[in-house]
Amino acid sequence: MLNYSETWELCSNIDAICTEFLALFNLNQSRQSKTSMQQSPHIRVYLIIKQTELMATVLVINGPNLNLLGMREPNHYGATSLADIEARLNTLTAEEGHELLWFQSNAEHELIQRIQLALEDAVDFIIINPAAYTHTSIALRDAFSAVKIPFIEVHLSNIHARETFRHHSYLADIAVGQICGLGALGYELALTAAFDHIDNTFTD
Ligand code: DQA
Image (tube, rainbow, N blue to C red; front, side, top):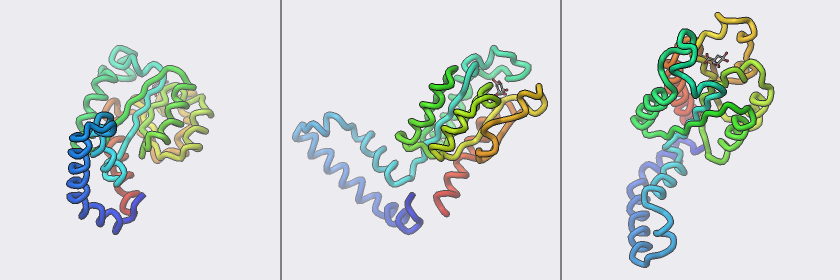
């Protein structure tokens, strides 16, 4: 993470960086070089922005049965589908100039693998609804402890007002926070909190 003065210096140089980059790209293009064929200007601008930490990457992970949102027990989970939640959060993220990645799986090991991969993707923050694995998975907890990426736990329903086996979470005490009982809005609130957390880490 860059400190304040390094960031300021990079921001003041951003015009020069872009001009240099465009010149390089035009040169490569005129030579029909391999680099210009393989890397679009968009990808390279993305890499520059990502390297300067101006763009944050947030990963949203959804656990088992959440692919059925919208038709699954609407009395607990509401009528909004996962695709609708994705569309809403994608819009909010684009407005902020950040990047949002999505993953859903019904398999515990795939969720763990995605959390581990988040290190390679330089993910800054994770929002997770671990669904039923919330109440059973020490392995998911260990994955978060290993990667040390800050995360928020989200539940559509109020797990504390339901069966007692849903009251305990293996993740809550190592999470930045837990949001539950607010339906699909919980994901939006988690996203706002994630950006806030990233901004605060950035200016510390
Ligand atoms: C849930 C609550 C869990 O107890 C349950 O197993 C789910 C969904 C929620 O979003 O309210 O699958 O995580």
